[in-house]
Image 1 (cartoon, rainbow, N blue to C red):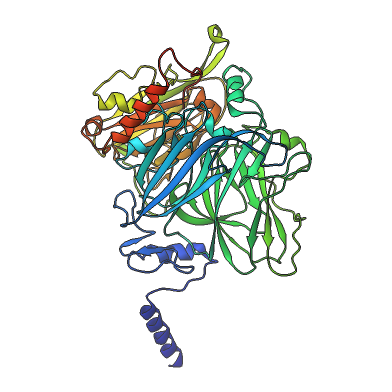
Image 2 (image 1 turned 120 degrees about the vertical axis):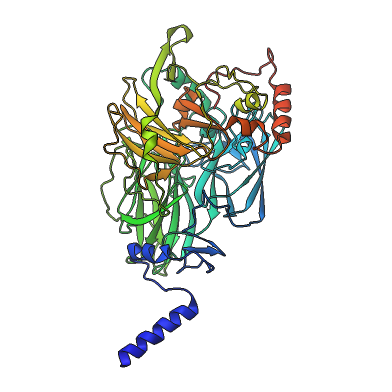
Length: 586
Ligand code: C2O
């Protein structure tokens, strides 16, 4: 009787509180509990699935308009300066607001972001892309010079305006040639619900390769090299690291024993694939890119360029110092720092009293060296891709070309043509003017039917067996399958029922990659390899989605777009270029 009464009492308490307290050490159980919630509850350490009235982690954020938000404004200014992030010595750099990485842009799900970007560079155009942001009906704010805008001319400012229809972690970067390798990079957080609980959000943890020579100089080498791109010199974790000579310092992640922490890991590299692990602290993974997933626990993660993983760690070990280890995907890239004895990574430091601030002596897992994607990524809100699309796939054949007449210019080709955008005449300008000739803005594929699903598959044809991190703008894609060799056009081995959904997936070396997404966002969207050297060598295609609606005004007022082109065309006049466009332009 007593037992029955206390059960009734606890049930009564639960329904009064409206919140079920749960054990965060069992993510699988949390996920089940959280699936049932889609109503008014308050987001907090034990209720991360909640957001606000009618919105929660169970909301299908592609199908439903986001919560009403406020307007969040940022001002970014890009200048020529120098940077010395690892103590090796100052090198010329291009930075945002004088810092590397640039300021963290932070807003909440449903907010409107207004970001004024001033180009104070001496003699470069620029354009900032908000990586992974869907840009629903706002394609002209996607920030891709030669595709969705004319570059921002020196001395000029462009205002980007877009709504945060998704939530989670991402980054922003220049999309003008190889410019982000010069340092024009920052991170971005959209606060929202989560698929597992944590106490404290530690914010973004960008990891990048770092070169001692200017990116534009290396880009020129890479464009005319038949042996592949130049080797990086170091890595940076949140903009710092030790160098090969022992100078510089490690980034420190400060925690307190007994708390659970969310860490937002981002690979912002030019060329590097990483593997990461934290000694003694396994990761509970809760997102892949901007997509909440069913939480799973792993001792290490592989992360390719542009990808993000939000993880939760439990600071439940003996208070001390632990390595956050970063390993290289040496199967596809290399770094001079690997020949030194320097540990790659950062330090997890317990700030509990008595813990000295020192380099760890902990040991951990052996990191993998491959360049493959994680495979455990199940979206929290399920989706099914119609199997009918398998019968009409759009094939994109990846090859390469070496042009002896242009000093062995190396380009990647898709179906025989390489991308070379025209900064004066972006694809969007052609579309708005009703044109159909995109010139060397190559491989424009139409997706004409509203909300229709389309399947695209990239098939490696070239004999150069390299993996490529493929990134799509304007959408998450659904990864139906991948493999080595040639796709046999059968459904065997493909996932149609709740496949992995994200905005960067890796094409296996010498293989194929099948990507599906619906035509639910009118605009012109680029899909490219996110290795900066490869994007410069033309490895990209464009999807023109619902042309009639784009022409009919679905992208909103084009006054900022037109102003940008007038200013650029004043600066970059035919016969009066301060320098030449030697690469794809993006
Ligand atoms: Cu990170 Cu085309 O973008």
